[in-house]
Length: 276
Image 1: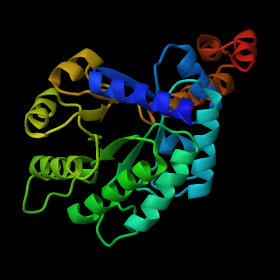
Image 2: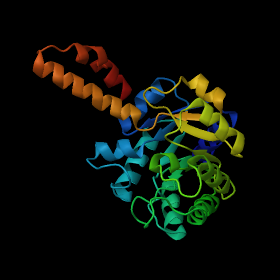
Image 3: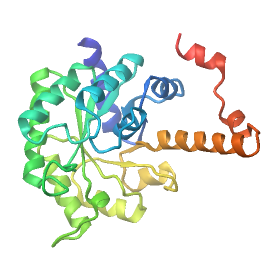
């Protein structure tokens, strides 16, 4: 518990300081490599964990399998680990409370919890009131566990891209400020990397913003200067690994050469040292 509290405090400091770059791991190997390369903290990626276990993203993997992989990543490194728990594996506050307590028990220092219902509600997004209740439950779970985890409330308005009587910008700002007033420490807005839009959001949202770097995104210093406090990599490194495997396979079967394999080769000695 003392170790977890120290890591939780360190993670909070990193988030409050800002200009924080967070890598996202999906297994022990990726976690150890990111830690060895100098990242001060890690997140897990629900998509990466799901794909590595043979499931689609969006809460298709069981909560037990997700928790087991989160726990193994936490145990594999000595730096803070933030858990991506998708929608919290619960439709109501009691279910979210219970799962957050289980995740805290695995040793995490923070969570991402999103407002995407993933089909367990008639609408694609939980209503603001529903998500506020779920965030309050997550904060209560942290308080009752005596671990003040950092709660990052993901807003999927730009991913779902379904505006109603309000614009996506207005919907996002409204949700962000409600979530920040309901127990969240930060809001995460995937699908946004336009610098002008990010700057507009920063001016209207009353708290720190996390965004995800995608292929083709502006460099991180521009993202930070535009208003991001935290930039995470999400599932993108795992997808890049999948892309590298595809290139290795295509080259090996078409030309018989292994240039791509040589380019990305980690090395037997390095791998053995990584798992000492």
